[in-house]
Length: 361
Image 1 (tube, rainbow, N blue to C red):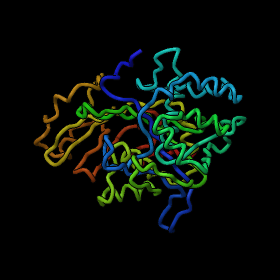
Image 2: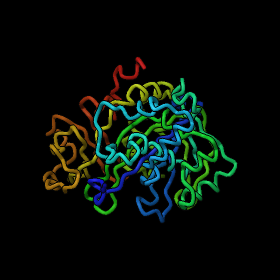
Image 3: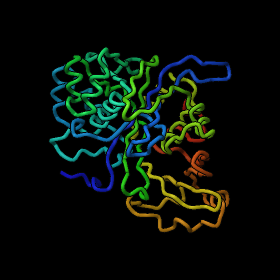
């Protein structure tokens, strides 16, 4: 069956990889860093941007062969089914369109894991007898022939499942936390992606093996430091990355973050598809819940009111709204985030107004 929006955009999955790290100085409160990489200049989508590992969904990710794979490794159906049981918002990307395909809640996790390995050599595995760890952390397996396997999977001469079969390992779909779901705005008609974001947390930073055709360089750094490098124009972060790093930037402790992510894991993900409005001094992108976000948006239509407020400043436009959920852009490297209501899906607040949300984690 052809997916409903297949001709309009591609499905993809991305992985926010966090690893424990001791603060470098007293003023640095974070005990973790985030893994990102800079795309090469010849990348077809957002060249030279700094992103989380991830990429396009592939038919191998949805193969029912994974069911027999898990069964042969004594992974229980109960454990697998638990991953698919989500109570909250389910964007279209999570819908499974046939009995001949693996459940999308599993296949998207496999996609994110596969891409992280293809691009950076990060192979997350779990003990088949204890799929969900007590700590909620993932484990990265170091391979002696990682470059060879990366090349095979990238070229399509071997599958991700074949890699795990050869190693006798199980991909860690169990310790990934559903984080968010983003859709490229409608104005980018020819290059749109609906992307499921997952969070993975490691106890230490693993060795990274960048794939040369896709990765120009990679970074481990704190959320605040990456955002500062973006503002100083040392790097350029894609919009979903700035939003996700901003809400991460208010959480300093990795264990607290894992407890929060685990509690929120099955509360769903409202689709975040930004809609643009022009202003006299910049650009505004509104998100679901904002007064300017259209009701029952079809995710395909251009914004007929793009220039409705074009002669007003961003501040003047903002003062006219009661409900705010928006990103105001002064330019490509300077954004301000506004949210004056409860975050969607019981998530972190993009301005850090988390109240008691983290206190009891």
